[in-house]
Image (tube, rainbow, N blue to C red; front, side, top):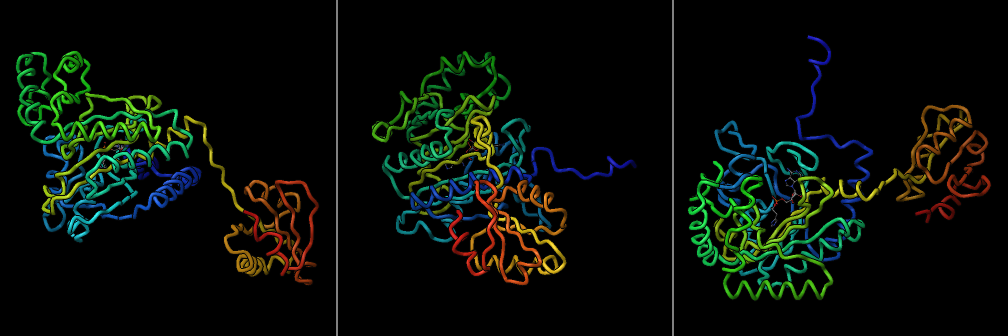
Length: 426
Ligand code: HAM
């Protein structure tokens, strides 16, 4: 066996995130946390593994995710478990299990974490990817739909990618109007049965709406001429949709109505939406969501309203790259100790500095070198100041400070004065 055969690599579509990339991740995650705080949403954390039937019952048996994309296995107890392909089902399960929706309690929740789908990996499409999910419960009106879209819009503006994304909205009505539409659609598809591909023929009776989502080029003309769901929706859904549009206009959030948007998961009703981009090739959806007023009761909970969205964070990072955002590593100080006495005490001095300067990030040089060499390392570390301790400084309990990014002489100060000079460096 040669060396390369022996090498263990990561699983395809499940990439590592290296330190340089974690800077971009932390930048994005911090923005998200601040925004969720600003809208007073609370964080919820669900497990990675759930019982398989949770997803079959919520996302739907005849969907791409459940039919083809789930990482499902039997555990040692022969129970079928699945690595979560999305967060809404688990979030609803947790809310029911812990009675968070009892007595029509309102909840505004968010979560961030990995999801797994067995899809063909390509740019913007991974087998392990990260979603920010936001879910709001027991708020029936369109205001909360608009609030969720305002959260997205604020995030795009904060990240300065607002010009790279477009909002598409649609309403798929309630169940009865969807059934009426389904009959019309079935009639149309049956009249054109020879134009259907194999996948679509299979779905004709189980889930004909999903046929409209087909990416098959040969079927696009057929899909373009199909009856439109928006023409069949019930009066209340129509009103909800009209009010949502008014609110979006009031909030200055641009949108287009896409009457073909039906979404690939079965739990939706009324509002559905996607934020799309043309910067990521065929993976155009950066964020997607909608209303799901029947999901909680479908999963055994009390009748509750629900609406939410999820953003694919790897896709957002690709957008940041397209917008040329680069987050550089930045630390506050680089400590260099020169001379036997100072070198022996460098860890002690570093600890003393950390006590004096809370929230100050400090890297300690541990390998020594010439003065010039140490300054080169300090510069490369990205530090704002170099902190220099020689044997004289040890003797006198002082420290020398040199600002690396602005003009100014090196100054030597008493250790106790460090706080007044560097305490508000941020
Ligand atoms: P979804 O459309 O399946 O909806 O996924 C939401 C977003 O996750 C997509 O728009 C995309 O940005 C990202 N995403 C999905 N699959 C991948 C992948 N293989 N690689 C990278 N990114 C991906 C949901 O998951 C629903 N739970 C959204 C929702 C929340 N609806 C209501 N509440």
